Image 1 (cartoon, rainbow, N blue to C red):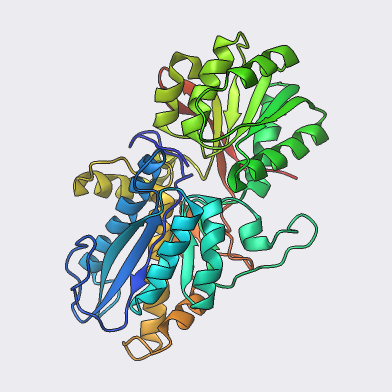
Image 2: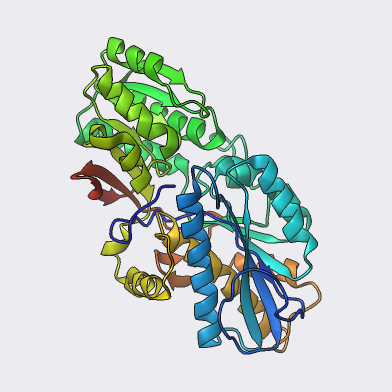
Length: 411
């Protein structure tokens, strides 16, 4: 969930909603022009992401990356007789708006799939709407385990919605992975845990805390902040007085940046650590010099280190998008391409045409989609979760995020 310049993006790339339309409509829809395809049927790829507001850096990276996937598919005529278009809807990072967008996408009979959203809380609000309509959803950024494994995922995993998939790994892995790094590698033993009370942040903080305590670490304080606030001086004072040698924050960069800055100003010269929600160039802008030494985990391996991503990075640059592809660019491209592959399978199985029940068929086809993507091997397990469990730790140094360690959680 963070912005990354073209150079420093992690394979944590992930979020946005992609919607495909494909029931014989022509190119008369709004949205971006995704290039010329093979003519015939138009499939609209809808994107749901925060395109305005504090998280827009990530949302625009998602939208652009999906657009690039559609353009590429059209140029290559990847699905014979199908032209892909993109329609992007702005959820403003709000669950209620996301749900309205889901309803809007479902109402368009041509929509065959959705990429997104960015936020797990928004994803929660959209799942039932899509599932009832048998419309596939692939998120490049949702990381809360409950979305795919049910609310009791820690004791009994049950997949709530057959139509929900994601290319980002979950916080069931990300939180413990961060805890292992903080305790074993960074040698921090006393943590102050803060979260923003939202689905993503609270869930991530909880999985981090459980593993940190299991390793022998001590939680010297906990606090919840109001994500609408920018004044965290009271919390910063508590952190200083608690004697913590590290802060773990479950939330996103608009709050994490100022929080890090104010903790240091209060006299606690300790690193702030967060998840993919803070992995953005905007975090560095907001935290200023105080952010040096802060850490973030993000899904996947660093894009600049993946041979599979070289073409994506080059094509994105050549396409001339004004905004960076961000942390979820690669995952967004792969989410879109997964839908494109599912559509291709459905079309090929129906003599080169889309069947009347194309939506349901695309949901079924998605379960078996497998290809070599920007972020590595793309496929899904029995819960619709990504089979790629790679994660990376990044650190702020000289005003930029740099790779520290890449691997996965070992339970």
